[in-house]
Image (cartoon, rainbow, N blue to C red; front, side):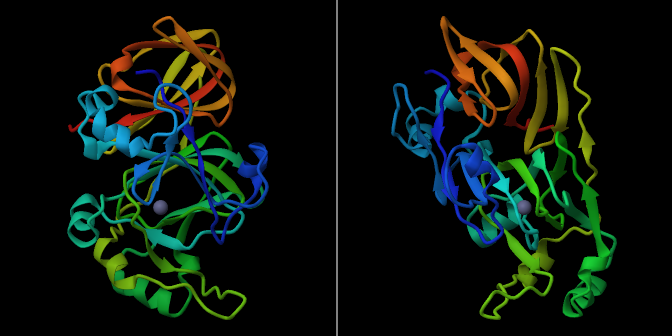
Length: 311
Ligand SMILES: [Zn+2]
């Protein structure tokens, strides 16, 4: 099996920007652009090669060993771009146990790497309120905005949002999202916003309060890239994310685990066996576990994500 490319899925959202679509030569505003996903809510099709047109979810069922290697199926990751013009509502995701019991879905831990930051370029991760009753009161009085932890994000910044942390992406940011294979989000505050018809969006307060962990306050990770280096951005049970900075070349090994690669900048050549393919900014590639040795040559930066190891 060769490295896999996918047909992206462009999804319209209320808060969408048109920056990512424009970069791909596509008209319209799309908030979520699925790049590598096998979740039933949005499953990518393979583009080119031996499996052209097949759903990734189907291939994972027919060739689990080749793709996943020693990684269990439930630890497969989802990757998408989020392109926000408006602030997203304040939300929270359940952990694995709650999601399995209540939603028949997986829990969601996610991380964002900032591709483009313009306008307000800030996001929310955590709250200064450490008491659920006080948080409830602030939501009722529509004053929660004053108690949120805002983080200014520059291009290249990274933040990990564990399940249970209150968070929201901010308008003006285009990020790569790496997450566990989940589609469950609970909205707990929408800044009192109303749509053109005067309607507010539904909130999921009860479930939000079930899963909220008010002790979680994430910090921004600022990468400090060196030439031909691998910098760890996060390493948790859900996944590991790294920034590869390539000046000449890096030789890498799947070690029987799948790797997701997303080109951030530059132009690179991915080589395996006696074959190669080109990587350009925003390209997302799945390296199946069975590849073993591969290399990246040229000049550029790449985000690499892989399933986390149980510690
Ligand atoms: Zn989220």
